[in-house]
Image (tube, rainbow, N blue to C red; front, side, top):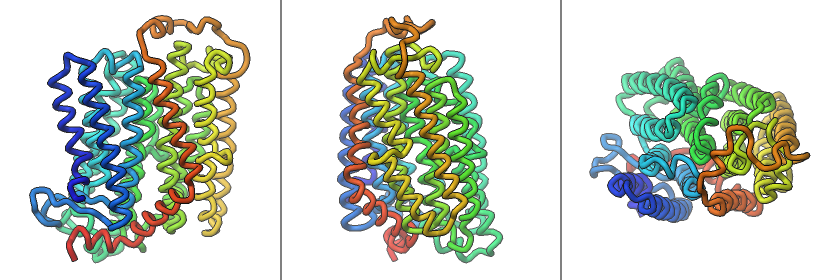
Length: 500
């Protein structure tokens, strides 16, 4: 089973190379991409079953034992993240095949997308901090290409904001790596678990704060979120869906992993994380309410939802982290589906401006239904998966008597519902602003060939998956609880990596 750990990284990289070689045939590129990601999804499910039954699986690159060599490690948390990310990556690629945009007109779309998939898998399974830095850089390069495909001025400007902020975060990450290595003599995360605990308390606190800033920037928490709403809405809908739905959760995963595995319990900045969580919830949802564009509103909602995940981490309890794990899984699926739905809205009307939409519930009932299911789940309406996720976080907050953050989370939930209702009223209800579906400047977009059925099918698959997460909330939450127990008591992880 150890070979399964490396396959989600190796297969997309090999497929990316093959996709370049057959670049003259878009059909061949599509086949390679879809088949590869389908296989990766199957491997991820098999790996999750294996890890849940038998414990962490470790691969030592080149046969060099840890902490000298590079270790790839899959425990329950990594396998869960790998599983949901591979399913979403497959669904979004299927949507991109039907979208009349970058996938159809640029030979580099499929190779970049596959490299992005490999970088995400590497981030979830790497066992050392330097390799985590490499994984972030791989995803940065691929996502920058995807963001700017087409070369439109707005895309390039947004891409520059994204890459500049990402490079600043990467520079700080490298400085943090140097600090950690100087203090401990290693960057292997299992080895660091014991070595950081031996350092003076002030050094531990400094490392914890640096890791919060580095990974908080990647996750887009307040006040480090400003790059996200400007970067994502200008890209094609499929690119926006995978970046907004998935990439910020890689930063959340890194936050969880670093604060539980590397930082000793006494040095964990729980209070700071709770304050950050509350500010992120409120700033994100208020920003969403103020937006006049559908995708920008959803982008600010991405920021708000990150706050709930950080809340679960900040509690540093099994119940809180279990809620955070479920929330991450649910949000990846729901946010990707919402951004794909936004793409369907733009495909139908030629615009995403709320003031130029209206009556879509009558003109495009399937799109309206998909939006309603996923948006109500995001708002936490029972019995959808978003309700389960929020209850799974609010109950541990109440048990910990964190009444302030609990009140903020409830207010943010109500404001999220208001934001969703505002979008529904403007875009889906009322009389059509433009009966023929050709908002100014959008006619050309409508005339391009597309496979609308594929786009709707891919979006519907994610919507159905969000419903399945609600129907199977018990087993999924139990799995999240086992993952939370592992990360809060990482001795099994450390023993598996170091062999002791």
